[in-house]
Length: 454
Image (tube, rainbow, N blue to C red; front, top):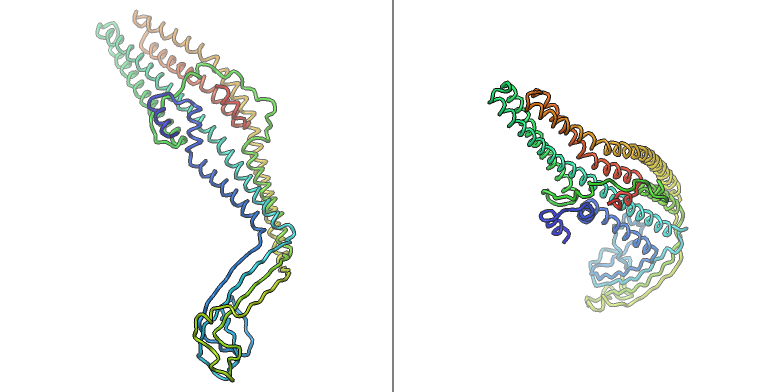
């Protein structure tokens, strides 16, 4: 629905900045990916909570085979052995019958020195990290879209400026050609005028290409196919009413700093969890067993025929056992390994702390630069109309003088160039004020400072 709305907006209506930002937040693939990472972290937290639940397992098997026994030692290496049980016979016996084994087992690690609680906390910190990562990515996407929107606006305004410059150059060309044909000016003036028209056409073509590139950048950020955009230019008629940072905005609340701080907290919590893995695990367990066999209790050398091939008798439950107990397991070498794991995690925390300090320093420098950019943009904004008016007056004066033979073509084309440059500076002066405010919002982490200025 949002994509269809954007298509209709782009083709028939003006695409406002807020609409562009809302579309980007809904469609940008990176945001979708990080939203899924948050969902994954939420599931991991829930899985960590359920890790404390006891293990409950059921097992059943029905077999057919022989039961030859033999005295001797045995070690079940990696579980690769058979569990046949029977009397020790003087030789190999190939008599076979059905047998069965049914088990129900409960095992609960009821005391682990806080291991499960720490794991839940560690997963919770990872969830907080992924959530802050999503939040700061949304913030950066808002800034990127706003910047691309303003860049495209500037590019579209430059097209109008270059179009006006081409029309002026063509008007001059018409005057020059008329005076040259009337032999009032030398023929070289027409060449100069033709060159200026060609230069203006090239500048217009370059402006169109630049606009297409900026439109492509915006389309990528919106997650839509590249197309022409009709943008809102009304807010450029004025500058923001206020550009002061509201009271209560703290530098440490910047989304990027919040994300890096969450990484540190997640690493520190992971170290706490690792420490708990060095301690023993106390467990309570219980087993219920049912077993059946097609061999009689007295099967052996004295009764070699004490068995049956009856399937029902072999797989039925003939004997039951139960077992309950409390156990403790502690690998005595684990603390030595965990010690190094905790040390490694500690150094990771220190590294993340240094990255946090670097980002903090960069943002502090950007906040200072933002104030300078705002001051410079406002100064240019005030000077731009004066420059345009002076350049226009000079152009009109030289144009009149040229028509009356009081100025040459070089003087006229020079004023034409100055007027074009002045109009270009004027077109981007307003835009640069908004760009400076956007830069300050990005540096302070206060998105409302920019978006509420509209």
